Image 1: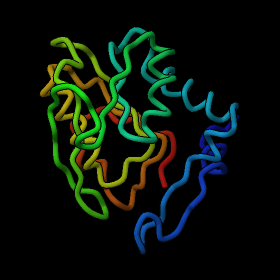
Image 2: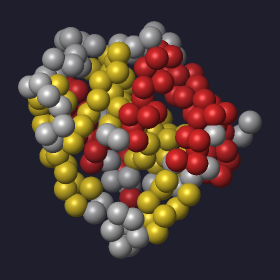
Image 3: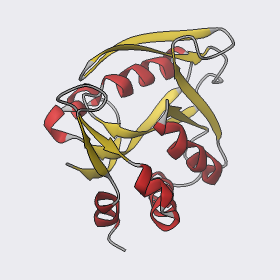
Length: 174
């Protein structure tokens, strides 16, 4: 199976969403295809290797969908990074810029034990702002960022420069 081809064939462009001028990369067709979805999860696990991480961080919201089965396959815990006000316990928060505005994300303060190895998983690396903010939250919480794994990188937004200190694994680059 040519995984890159499969992924690209199952991601649709939605123009002017969520704002005019933005082309949204919709991964729901990929998620609906069991074989493609399983291949993506398996590719993340194969790239990083079992036993290399203690926790998987999934970034709201589509990152949750990818990160949870990755955590299961690793035998690791799953930690959600959510938008401000969505987590019930005491949190760290980090503001960042998107390609179309600003946002703040949070993580529970007790999500990690000191030195736990943490893999961050998300669907898209765009400007790198969300991934950078998530990495900062992991570090503030006492975790060590083992890497960042994304389904797709939008190279024209140069987000990799914003996460240059991370081990970045990308399945497709557009």
